[in-house]
Amino acid sequence: MKFPKLLLFLLFTSSFAFAQPDTLKVKKERKKVEFGPNKTHYVHAYFNFLFATPPEEGNDADIFYGKTHSISYGVRYRFKIADFFAVGAGLNYTYYAWHFKQTENKKIPTSALYDKEKLKINTLGADVFIRFKIGKNKKSSVGNYIDAGAYADWDYYDSRQFTNFVNNTNSDGYSTYTGINSKLNYLNKINYGAELRLGYGKIVLFGKYRLSDMFTPDYKQLVSNTELPRLMIGLEIGLHK
Image (cartoon, rainbow, N blue to C red):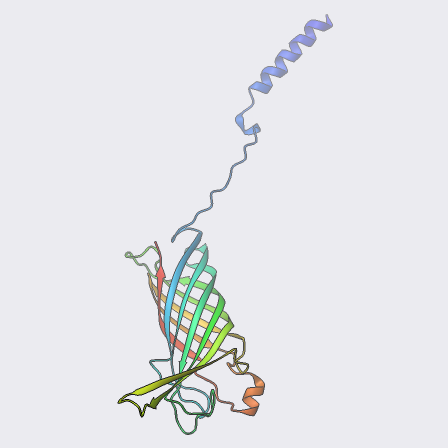
């Protein structure tokens, strides 16, 4: 009698097990990573063109405003936390060109006078920022936004270029002499500061303010405390899809 009872018990338990809902089956679901202008993650390239703005600190250097500029090209990543708020970071290459007027009181970068003189600085940089999205922009998937952040630049190659136009007595014209000094030991290799961007789609009004000094403490003590302008303002173009 034990065998029939055991058989009935096995049939009952097996039928009950097959009747369980699918929720007992564990299924692994992969969460889809979203990339795009309105998605959680977004990466895009950009370039900007900024101009130095007055004033400089001190009287021992006078630059040509309108000619002194920087050009940057980089890549920026943005992580959206909410519809109105995001954080991000970027990497870039930046070229700075500082054009100096040749005046009698000039001490920076040297006291020697030339027909033309400029500092050329090549940097690799990084920045971090927070973003607040404002309003709506039906013409752009990126929208309107304000970025506030901080940046740092590493000067990996710099030079001073100076030019003189020499009267050539053997002809009716002038000869041009250009000299270049590189690996300047009076420039700080790391510079940092704050930045602010106001974006309308692909067009961005961009400003950056250098908090660090360009020149080394020894140079400032021996030559001059004058600092070149800290604020640069210009436009940035986002290379969005």
